[in-house]
Image 1 (spheres, rainbow over the protein chains, first blue to last red):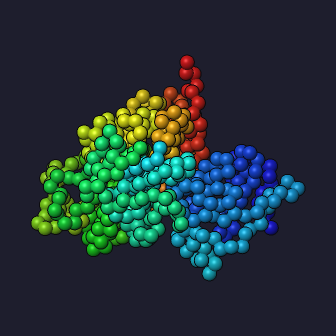
Image 2: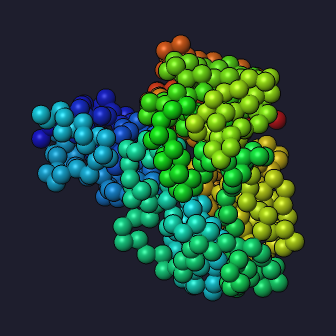
Image 3: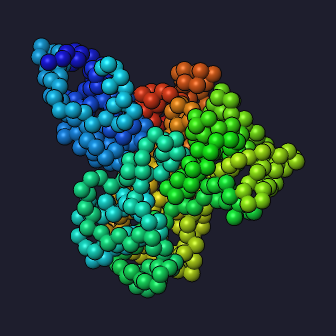
Length: 119
Length: 394
């Protein structure tokens, strides 16, 4: 379980980028729900925590691919691969994520960097 | 409605087909495309694909296993539309009859007179164009790009990255002054000089010289620019000539109402070929952006299926991006009506900033260079402010 930030520091409509490898985006929706997905868009290297959050959907800030925060599924192209979803927990006012353990589908350039970082 | 024909198999056509199925349309669906390829993504053609960083397979727009239950008529060019039975006539003599037609025939790259038949001269619009241009860029040497707009600038940046000697020729005093306004256009155009790419402004092209293959670009002022390869990036024209005489009202593109409806019931138009009425501007506007081609078909399809009764959500402010020399350029809104431009953070001199365009104090557009997060905030604010009446308005 990885600590993210205090819930009070993540207002509704905002996102937090967790600097894991690969990074994770934690969203607090306008409706008050918390979701965590891979931060890197599966189309090209862009940070989804910088994206446009609307309802349970985030739009990539670069090329406007849309992902469902609940399932990680692609709602709109150009992305074709889903992002992974991770579990979010709140304990004593602190937000935590529990990373899922399947390998991430990353765009080619970001994947190369992750491999490079691991070496 | 039991049969719908979508004419055009790129992003706008595919988005229309998807919208039809998503909105519950269960009838026959034909998709006509004049290229032989399944729908593919065009923006990478001037960038990652041209650079050889991604493959053709990565350009596909359809998801794996996606099933639209459509008859795909690819390599088939529409040559006419008969308003009486909404039949689409194809170049090979076939006709496709339907109850509803979605026109999504896009735009074609403009060419220069005298360029036809000269090897080494390219436009860039289709996958086949990009394949051919890439072959020539791999030969190296000198590239002259005619037109300093987004396509020209992106090709210049990609070719520079591939090691070519690149010159960009622009007829206007500053490229992109139309979409970005003069001051900010200059900041974006400065990227060329940063990377040692020559930008010649305020000069037109008189001729292309060469025997079988181009060897130089001759400018209006008599200068000759030696060239091994030339790219002509001087804009596009809507592909609507096939609708001549059909009764579909045309202007710069297909004249549409604010939901994509044309002058003929049961016929809507989307994407680069469509000039939708923009109530905020009080005029018809053709929008050539990728995001419009993806978003607007849902509105047009809702109008088609409801006989024009559906009330669409107002479209979001137009948004586009460009990647040049590793810098991410993003723009949203309309710069045309602005009376001021303010740099809100960063510095154009560092090629990293956000600038906001205002009209009477109200934000109407935003430009970002390598500032994705604040850009998105401003873009949202723009959409919110467009959805509410102007402060102080009667």
